[in-house]
Each structure stands twice: as structure tokens, then as C-alpha cells.
Amino acid sequence: QVQLVESGGGLVQAGGSLRLSCAASGSIARITAMRWYRQAPGKERDMVATITMRGFINYADSVKGRFTISRDNAKNTVDLQMNILKVEDTGVYYCNVVGVWGLDAWGQGTQVTVSS
Image (cartoon, rainbow, N blue to C red):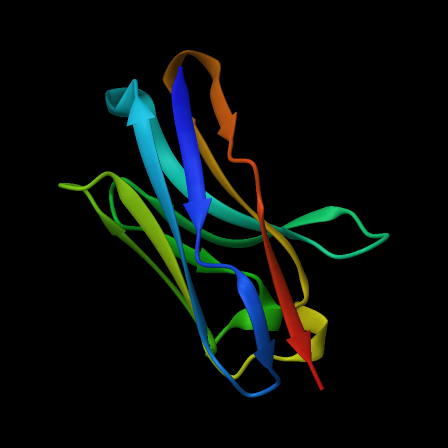
């Protein structure tokens, strides 16, 4: 299995920036993609950004141009740089990895609150 630990959440004013980080450990070789999801209060968990081990990147339309996902293979981390934050970006952000042999692991989540 793969264990994930997120960090970097917090409270920020609208227009500000935050950087989230997710450290993976365990069966790293099984990972094919790393993702960030967001769950706003009372809403479903939605994908925010994806990066595959081959470098393919995809973003939700709502964050394009503002968020950047990146990974460091040497450190086994995936980061999410969030700029020009909006109140609607508020939620719990989860790191997720998927891969071979049915790998699908989640972190514990980190709270991001954007105030107006």
C-alpha cells in the first residue's frame, strides 16, 4: 500500500496563495498518477488537478490558470501551488494516488479556508 501525508493548508484572504504538499511512502513504484481533490462543505469531493508519472497534467476548469500541480520523484511528493485564491476554493483538500494492482490511496485531508 501507499501512505500519504498532506501539509500546507490554512487560512488565507481572497487573492492570496497557499502551497499544499503530499508526501508518499510505501509501494511508490505502483503509482501511475497523483491527484488533488477538494471537498467543499456539503458538496461532493471533486478532482482539482492530476499529474501522471509520464507528466500528463490536467486541471478542473475552475482552477485553470491559478493552480499548478508538480511532483518531485526524488522526494516522492506532489505539490499544489494555489494562487489568486477565491472564497469558493474553501474546502478540505485530499491527496490521492492511483496505480497498478488496484492501488487507490487517500491522505487524511488538509483544510483550506479562504476569507473574503
